[in-house]
Length: 116
Image (cartoon, rainbow, N blue to C red; front, side, top):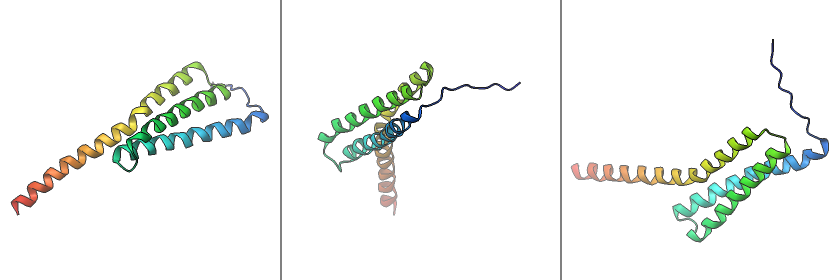
C-alpha cells in the first residue's frame, strides 16, 4: 500500500507573496555571503559587516515567514532555523579555510624556492 502525503493547497492569491518571499530569501542570502566574505577579504571595509548580518537577519525572517505561508509543519520550521544558524558561520569558515590554505602553501613555496 502506498503512503500518501496530503498537503494543504496554496491559495491562488498567496502565490505572488510566496514567490516574492522565496526570492527575497535567495537575494538576502547571496548578499549576506558576499558582504561578509568580501569584508573579510579586504575588498570592503569592516564597517560593512553589520550590513551583512542585517542581510542574514532579513533572510532568516523571510525564510520563517515563507515556511509559515506554505504551511510547513513545526519540525520543518525548526530544521530550517537550525540551518540558518549554521549558515551564519559558513562564510567565516570559508574565509578561514582559504587563509589557512594560502598560509600553508605559501610556506611550501618558500621552502621550494630555498632548495633551488
